[in-house]
Image 1 (cartoon, helix red, strand yellow):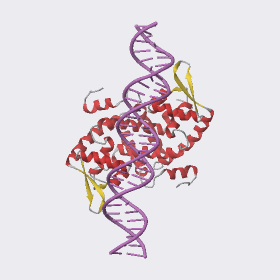
Image 2: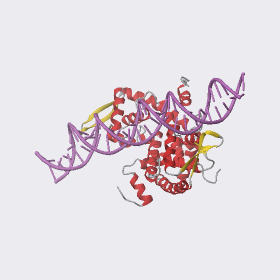
Image 3: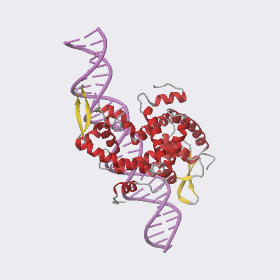
Image 4: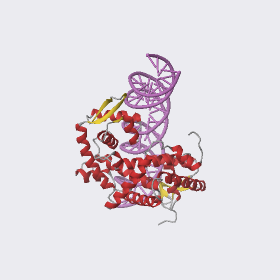
Length: 163
Length: 163
DNA sequence: CGAGGATCATCTGTAACGCAGAACATCTCG
DNA sequence: CGAGATGTTCTGCGTTACAGATGATCCTCG
């Protein structure tokens, strides 16, 4: 161990490393799925629960709204997903998975599950559950609306410029 | 709760959300530092322990070697870091922090610490420690050399094509 | 009802970024 | 000494994010 903490102690480093590893694994496993891991998340969001609007999905997944357009283009071209006009708001499109999309999602989910286990392999089963729980707990509030850089800057340096 | 698990249960989603939140926070707090969060990590790596070669730093931080060049260019132009020829290998450059760099690093570290606390604010003190530990444990092996997509694909689908 | 402003999706252009490949200097091993 | 490997830098390409404009539609208020 060092007197001065090594990079390995840095939260940013650990988070980045784990995220990159997860991305490598899911990229490899989800190759062939339009949009890769992000396509998977869109597909998964479209399949579960009520059909959502494109913008709603984008916000939930942290994807830019302009990116969502061609992401969905690809998924729709592959017949995995369907854009349907929202009967309640004709500006919006509701996204729903097709039968083919649901089948593809099931395969992808299983492959992804194994990729996740691979990434988490240094942990015991109990530790994996704890990690998932803690990450989820942080993510739920981090993804909440109104979470923007300004609030952090305000907290830390006390300025309110440009906010 | 849903019968079909919501996106919130997905490890990829949680990891991505937390990572994005951390990036937002550190970006906001480290604005002004050349290279942003990545510049910070390079600076931190240069300051701690033995001077390392550019490539060694790049691999440890998961940064492409060609990116490292102009990242260090910026840090050096700002006088925070110094390229010195490695006496043992004249191809390589050893990176070390200047006095100004060390001072800047100290400020940045403190600001970053507060940003981290902000991101982890939904957790108790004990939970934060657990999360850091678990992430670090995963990251250490994920960042190990020889960790590439092929191994995962081999595990999952059993193909060895192109590996 | 109707005008003004807001909102959703899309399109366009721009800037940043990672990555593959080549070039050059240097090291290492036979 | 020669051949191949390695560290750094440079160039070019494809991808991606993001800001801004546009068109269609909704909502609100007079």
